[in-house]
Length: 249
Ligand code: NDP
Image 1 (cartoon, rainbow, N blue to C red):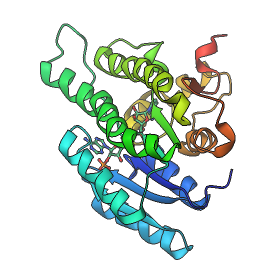
Image 2: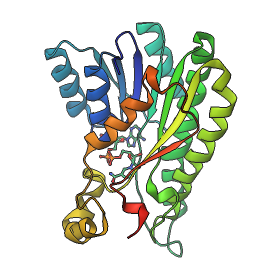
Image 3: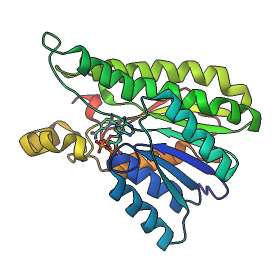
């Protein structure tokens, strides 16, 4: 799954799952631009780490909920590297709360950051990818799209929205050799889950058939596969990477 000559754009690449994806795609040969919101020092450290091993990357600050800012990032990357072959919409947040007390701000922040961001970047890359007759898009969903926890109505809606959006986009772009798929992680150890892991990590492990929590690299492997040339006949799908969590049993 060599990505030499490819240009990738990854959102939320400064930490957690996004960082693992940036490292994976760059080490597979792609030039990788990635977006962060506020973690400037960690983002620049990733660029330095990759540079030291001869890989090219570029960290850009951008609020993925801001359409104009996303358009600008895509323009900058195309200007610098001539194209975008691969887009990974990974940035995401949680603002949990039971519906009875959820504020409109909690709702809107999650919808804007998780779902509208996917629209923002997908729309911005559509024309360049259609013209190039090549594209690989992976949008980060969650097992919460299907199997929701109380207190995550906003998050579940954003992730289910991503899956529906991606299927529609897949049909629109298939004849242009642009694939659009989702990856739905289960329980992955990152900053997003640290509080829950600290409180209930052992109980969660027992509920997972693989008997371990997922690591960011588990997701990066799946993304690497879906953005490869070899995955050209897979589109409109959601790949669950959850250690069997959603199988029950
Ligand atoms: P983290 O909280 O570890 O990292 C989130 C990343 O998104 C950071 O790079 C952050 O940037 C970036 N980000 C957040 N908001 C914005 C914004 N408005 N604009 C730009 N960048 C932003 O999350 P994870 O790595 O755990 O999650 C990554 C994705 O995977 C998310 O979409 C999440 O919903 C999904 N997921 C995660 C699961 C898990 O168990 N961890 C399970 C299922 C799905 P910065 O560092 O600058 O803040």
